[in-house]
Amino acid sequence: MDTYQIKPVGFVVNEFNDPGDRHKIKEQPSTIIIHDIFIEGLLNIEACAFLDIVYYLHKSEGDQLSGTTPSGALRGAFASRSPLRPNPIGITTVKLLEHDHNKLVVKGLDAINRTPVIDIKCCDTSLFAAELDSNSVHNSILMADPRIEIRNHIINSQTEILMLKAGQMHGHYCPGLAMGVMAATYAMHELTTDSDGMEDLLAITETNNCFSDGVQFVTGCSFGNNALIFKDIGKTAFTLTKRDGKGIRICSRHESRNVIQEAFPGYQQLYEKVIAQQDHDPGLVAKYKKSALDRAFGTLSLPFDKLFTVSRIRADIPPYAPVHESMVCSVCGESVMASRTVKRNKKPVCAVCARTPCNTLTGEGIIINK
Ligand SMILES: [Zn+2]
Ligand SMILES: [Zn+2]
Image (cartoon, rainbow, N blue to C red; front, side, top):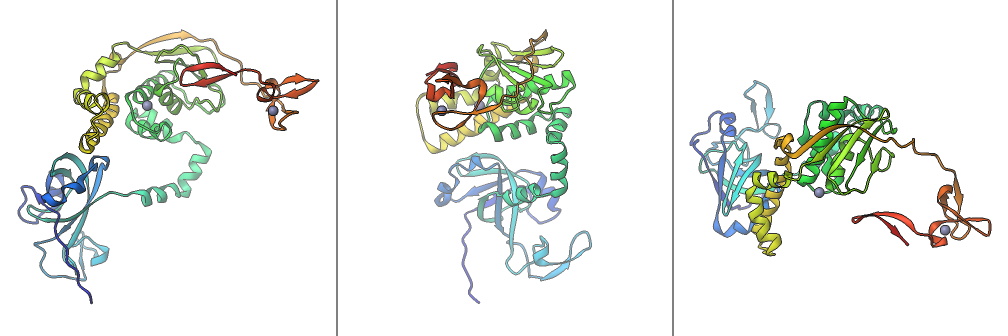
């Protein structure tokens, strides 16, 4: 049988010098010191909130292919986490708390002081996620009630989970998205309502920025289900209302920017360096990204009253979206909503072929596009 040599990349520092109760060891943060020649391997490690630590069980004596677990079950070495195994190697998933040069502070590691660390990997949970997604019982519940999870998170005020999910749509995490999630969760509580995507609950948003994606996700009032109404006013504000027009309007305070800035001073310093002064040192960029993430999620915990004003208003409710028949454009042959056609020689023509201007929503707001 071939044998292989491995070399440690670092070692563990903590207050536990003997293997004892592994749960006690896990509870305390441990520091991993990386040897100088491997420091480059830590580049951008802040992007990994969880890490798999591979280490050498240097105090393990002898190997045993089977044995009893602490709970008394008979298990093979490969079906357990016993330290007595053919290759005394441990693997533990930990949470990364801090990275400073050659030091990683982690939580959840069950290795003792001076344990040689063989490798560190960014934790990959894609398989678990896929397994969860394929859970047919859960899927059948979601089919019957697509918003059940979101609704439960709203009821329990779990804004952090809502933000995580909203980020899947928004593509990044930012204070604007956090404020949208907060405002929408608040309004949903106040109206004690939920959306079935059938225009009975309406969100009227006054801005087309990050805020509105938080609102769309949490309220379920979206561009596609016609329950999101956009007023091109340029205020970070939105109104949630039922068809009776009794709405709740939440508007961000002008000082909210300062409140967020003061709560996360570290971000501002890194922003100055990385964005304003364009210092793209990889270590600095990684720290900037981490602090941006902390700031985005940290915004959720700021006092609501300092960020927003709330008022009860009577909202103008538009009629339900009309159902238009489709026509075929006599020039390009594409199917088009009848209300968006013009007549040329008594035949329907689409806006593109007729070269008539149309309203277009861009980053600038609604513009007339020719
Ligand atoms: Zn954003
Ligand atoms: Zn056409």
